[in-house]
Image (cartoon, rainbow over all chains, first blue to last red; front, side, top):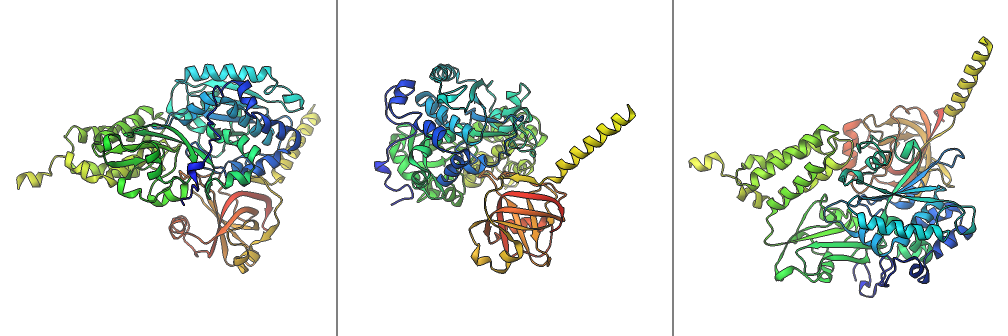
Length: 429
Length: 149
């Protein structure tokens, strides 16, 4: 038995197999908004936060921070001080596509989660910041949100109670950096999306300088499930230290790529089997387990490794967004890393020199190696560059750019060395 | 007119003063947990290991780089408890504390653990000193305006 328990009999709760679930009436027929009704009539706000703490829910946006704890960072309510919730739907991490599925197939679960979180933290407004490229999803969300407003589920005096809350859908403009929480707030305020220095942290000074909590789409969608089924139930699903259902976005050289809902703590090998195994019966070469920025694992490193914070940390990687990219034996790791480096160079906001210049140099050096013009010393130069970037910038984009470079070179050094020109002494010999 | 201006100034100072006089909270807001003096925790750590508790003491040292750790000591100023802030999976700090709080009374809420060698080595680089026997992963710190206990 793995940490995920009897996963073969697991029944989906985030994306249940119900036709037209995105329609409000279908969602309500399936018991939708019951958690909100219960919370508004019988729960105190602090009890909701306590239940979320009990559930052990960790953020699903990549950082894996305990959600209940994050909610408890909000300062006490002051009558004339507004406070905000922000839902981060700026899903742009390469290899990550699970929030989009939630917004498409179960948008009311997200709205209900937002309303429950708003009640728990006693706030009146939530900005739902959606990635600009998700144009059709934004239209869908807006249509369903309008229906929820008409049904008095959102807005003033929700369900006849004295609790009011608005949800405002905000369309991003396609910059990866806006997924970083402080850049997202700058972008919302109409400014250039440069990350802010912390402190102050968002709970102290967030949107418009007021207390703000920022949560990911999947994280907030877990809130109604926790209320309906109880924090205990949620804590009992999957890995003990990182529990709950999770959406695994599986892509790469597999037979059936897609979004799969299972408990945390699934064996990577089981997930590969669920996705139909490797394409054309090829062997697995590498796995990126949580979106492009997490360290890549070699095939020989994944035996017995499960998809949870603890196990992946031991294996030398991270859970991230659970966007799993499987790469087969024919994968050119240099070309793979060149793509990744190009992405981070393109998306660096340019505010901090180590990131602005470092990502550019990374791309140049890896391109040189990929073109067969690199030297062996370029590999050490790249590793040194990682040292100069990590932890030296306002936000974590430089870290996110350096981790895959450092780990891909260390774990597939042979692939890189073979592409470099021989050292001068070897030629002379 | 002069007296009105002086009156307004005094009022502003008074308001500012009352703001300064309140406790500052970093991270999670206070919860209904009993506050235990740091001496008691250090004397019998086995009773508190891996539990979430609130520990009170005087701040003796604080991280001057980022405000990511502080050292709490009791009245006897003997052994200390290393309090470091909770981190995200990607290593970002969940909150930080100001770097000028040495000598102030503080209550830290978190889990008592034994210091990890690698992490402690990092702290020793920041501020060389005695290696503490215990450490706390804090989810919130309340700092009093009072100097010491």
